[in-house]
Image (cartoon, rainbow, N blue to C red; front, side, top):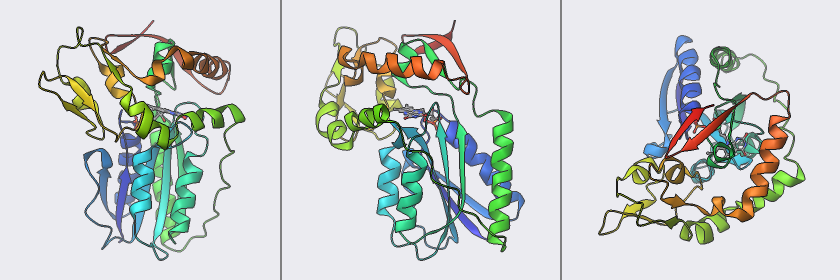
Length: 286
Ligand SMILES: Cc1cc2nc3c(=O)[nH]c(=O)nc-3n(C[C@H](O)[C@H](O)[C@H](O)COP(=O)(O)O)c2cc1C
């Protein structure tokens, strides 16, 4: 029996569901598994574990920044076994590549890589009227996650592992989008430019509760104030029942980007989508 730590970030729940299916499969093979969604804090330590699994949603064609930070914070992994799992709504880009490479650089030994679609609750796409991969992960994909766990277990027991090739890199347009959502711009510039309509804001606190990094605090009136630890997940804007929040991603400047993305993805026959309306923090299918 091995002790396995699975660390992941899940904001809207799909990565968590896949993590639970993988954990279920690993436990069925007799392993002890601890799960940690880092939006509730980092795990205390990796000491005492034989294997680490890292899971991330694709955020702007790369891992979410909090997962990158967590992986970078790990000590040298000295041949510790690892696996990676990635959730994505349309195109994952370098999400898996980046985590796999970072773990390799830490000295970990990969024993599995799993990728799966997850409902794409991205504010920009919802506002444009599209929800991609609307019902994912599907039952089949959760079963595949369990099968993946059984394979990982077999490799731990001595079966041969053939490392999957890296995913294809994002196209030039997506690399440009990634540039415009880089860490420096998000933390130094965009995080200061969230706009609040003070007349509309009722100080309900939804934005603060939704923020996965506790980046939003309340001023004297109970209205939100943003600090610099932003992931540009847009949960605050997306869930605001009064539509009082406007993030830089909603600037008219970026509208053509969303139009390009949803047009391209909606024409891709390998992707599912439904048309939606997103108003007052709620998404309804139309
Ligand atoms: C801020 C943000 C950026 C995203 N960027 C991408 C992306 O670049 N490529 C992609 O395929 N999906 C992207 N997605 C979709 C998520 O990867 C996908 O919905 C994932 O299942 C969400 O995981 P969660 O439910 O565990 O939070 C993005 C979603 C958000 C909120």
